[in-house]
Image 1 (tube, rainbow, N blue to C red):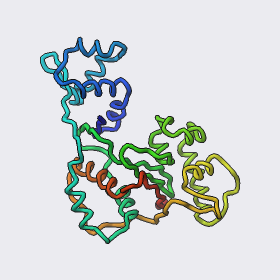
Image 2: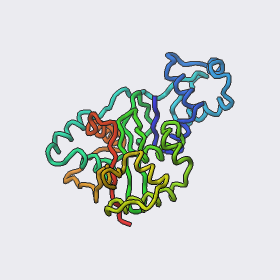
Image 3: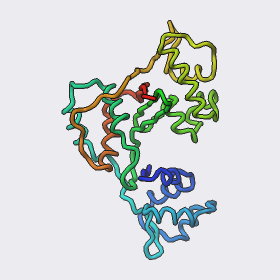
Image 4: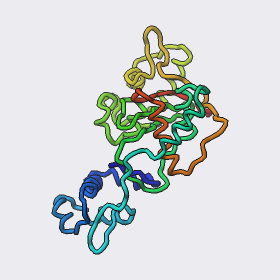
Length: 266
């Protein structure tokens, strides 16, 4: 089970190990439990009372007559399938899949849910590495995180997911790193070879953003701007949260991810 909220700080707290253990516990129990039973299940949790109060305050767990249970209904499937299919049919043949993926992430992506929701399935994700002159973006299928630079920096607190990049880059200053990437990408896009080897250049090679064979060039698509749809889908924030993720899954198809570079006006 994964929880999404309309508050990034709350969402970060929900991903802490002690909280995720409690959530897994409440998801599995069939009937409300008293505090003694919870303490018995988590004898090593030092902040159990505080964690329970946090879940209650955020209306994730309820406490009635001294008994605790999960308050949220767990969503098992995307509720937007009909909307996504209708949208795909309406724009069929007008744009390439790559153009639609770029439009989706640049113009229509919805980061936060309107209210806290619990999902029983992995959803598509969108991570971006931002520089004044460009954004490097990766869209991923649900449940997978290929070793790309946007995925690495978007999940910097979990370096174990990206052993190659973590070993190469480590805990580098993000602004300094993106500035160095910007200089390298500018040269390569202009058809010029980098002046020297560096971890910045190696990271671009290892994550397959650029190649040096037979000549230095980008291996990810470069966009000057995203497309503009004549008519945008109209929906509330909660629906949009599901819609963009399901649409990304449909557009990605068999691909695990899609990475692109887009220029930004300084």
